[in-house]
Image (cartoon, rainbow, N blue to C red; front, side):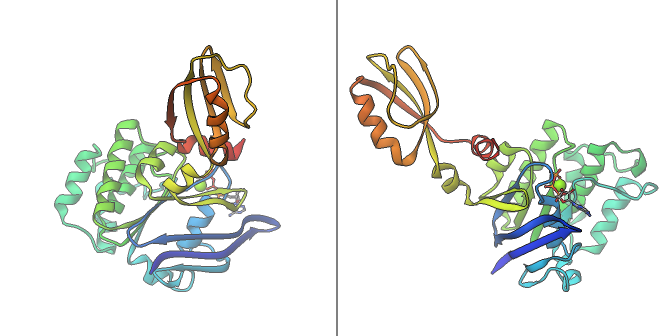
Length: 288
Ligand SMILES: Nc1ncnc2c1ncn2[C@@H]1O[C@H](COP(=O)(O)OP(=O)(O)OP(=O)(O)O)[C@@H](O)[C@H]1O
Ligand SMILES: [Mg+2]
């Protein structure tokens, strides 16, 4: 069963179409990275999944209707929003415990270990926490709950690099426990290291989705090639080419690799090194 399944979901705010017929699905045990520039519709999509916004089309979570069955769905789901707002007069520890009473949660030791790892002082009032510390409170509460589905909306935007790596470690742990995760993020290296699949959204439309490995290798390959004779000009269509002496770096569409090698043969190839495309390169190529 799909844990999340959006089919032809659209959402307008007045005359502004924030989401235009999007499809998104999350399999059991999968980590899905949801990426796109500011204002592309990520948070709106997550809020539909969470039953906080009504939409056109079909939005199902655990096979149930995201809007009508939100109460049942939420019993088995944890969510961390991008901007965490907490009750100002409660301490971080009290907020975490409150969340843990609402959901099925792990033992107290799990919570204490997380607080130690994230270096959170649970005795402070929430109004005195910095942005990063508010985010930690929400993350710890979510990570302590023992549910099937975790939804994170830019969870590391306020965290320093050390805390970011602790978050990543925790996500990997959830994944090893067979949990399913939907992670919206601007940090592409984070998505690359954590996610099995990705969906890229642009102006409210999904423009790319699938298994991360398939997608990255789908379009282009990058090569560093050394030849014996200097290359002056190539006839094969290539991109991002730089030639320094007998060394060239370039990207080429998969279908043109054969052509390129044939052409370079006349320059006597000394070595070929291939680099796979990074998610960042893929992302940038969509947004340029
Ligand atoms: N309640 C609302 N009323 C009117 N417009 C809205 C509302 N919520 C979102 N929008 C608009 O919908 C679009 C998508 O917003 P959304 O918050 O989903 O983007 P996002 O991808 O999460 O961006 P970011 O990366 O900055 O968090 C934006 O243009 C935003 O202004
Ligand atoms: Mg957002």
